[in-house]
Length: 238
Image 1 (spheres, rainbow, N blue to C red):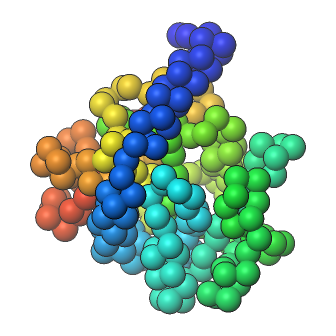
Image 2: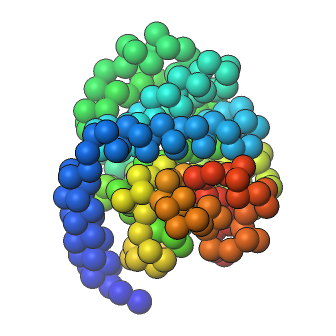
């Protein structure tokens, strides 16, 4: 197993390479892919059956989540968005009640709109996560601060556990949203003991090669690739 320092160096190099390449993706492609991902997420049963959803507020270069956020509110679901706490390198999930609430948010550390005090008051069903990249083993590399890894660890401790079984929708499912260029091959992302994988990835990458199901058919919760379109969901390896 790689040392902590080696792991950090590997992640830093990979992160820098991907972020540099991401700057070259045309904005038209980002917009088009974001629309496709949005349709896929809104059609998936996990979204439809979830009453309490966390979704990040996107920044330039990421999958645009504005339409997903609007639809969560429109459908009367509970929306929680992350607020960063720089000293502790942690995030809180705080509730947004309506469109006016959303539009009034100030910019936080990363220039992303962040909510004021209104903490998570119930369990989440689904968390839609950003990432610098994901791989086909459902590993994730973020921006290097460990915000989501710490949140998932804390949430797991407070609420029992984070689900690794997709049929258990009353536990939290973690799904990454990714542009096709930011989905890497199997076992590409170096991981350590504190790194959380995701249950699924929503990305057009899985349409490019006809693979909408991840590693194997048994990981397809519906058994119907057409229903999932670009939505890839699989059990996290135990």
